Image (cartoon, rainbow, N blue to C red; front, side, top):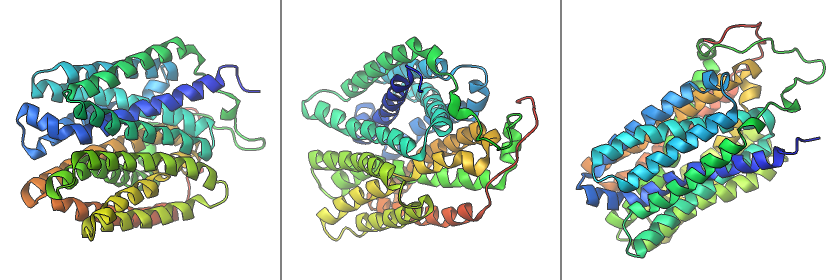
Length: 402
């Protein structure tokens, strides 16, 4: 029988992923206004992304270490508090350098939320549930552009959008704090009857010695870079290079993030009937096709539909790869592996959009299309050898975590 609090915990996990997506959805629509407010060049976004990445990497790389010493609930409460402070700081600061500094705190909070919930979900729930969990990220990311577009359309400053989301994060921090003692291992953590019992947890160094770990990190790096670059730069491409109205562009960026949600909800059902490896391969190919439609710009509608196709195609990739982590790496490496994958993901999420920004400043915003297409092709090229490597089956003797 499930614990009485189990449904509330998975509900909070869903809300936690909504909160992860909201700031990502805000930024793409808010950036032109932020740039005008602080009198910044087009590629100044890179500074904020780099600081966010540094914080995210720090918390993601240390997630296995932290989860060995803190309950998941305590970690999530502290992480949401850090994220709330950073977002409210965005809304209040009059200086760009302060906002960049707050990006470090935002990254620390978001990275711990991401790694903590993903580790809990990968070891407690099925691939179907993990897909639905990540669909909640899409709900947040789709809601972010709606919130910011509504704020701007009403004539309010962009800071209002961050204040609204920051307030919501503060409420979530309180919820995680009140339930922090409920986040305990369940019976699902026990190995199947007759299976070898894992006797210890791998060190981070031993996990990094696995070739499959490095390929996995590369896949996560490129995937999240592609997802974030589309969500961050397509709005600017449509409004500043292709004369599409801000309301239309904002709506279609919401469609992009919303299609991630729909795709993950649907894939949560599909994974019960279609092999995950085949589903992922088809998704990589479809994502590349969507990028080609944006690049070619044959018609405005074609470009907009290409963006939506990318959202649907990218939807199952991240949660399916997370759900496969225990099988591919083994239980002893799962906590470290998820943290390293999340760290690689946020590195790609920040660095690739920053690179696209530099290219756009020097070559024009139309470079966004071919950049997305190139990333989609590289992603497929990395996935094939990743699947070809045999899964890690080693069970370790007891060891002291470094």
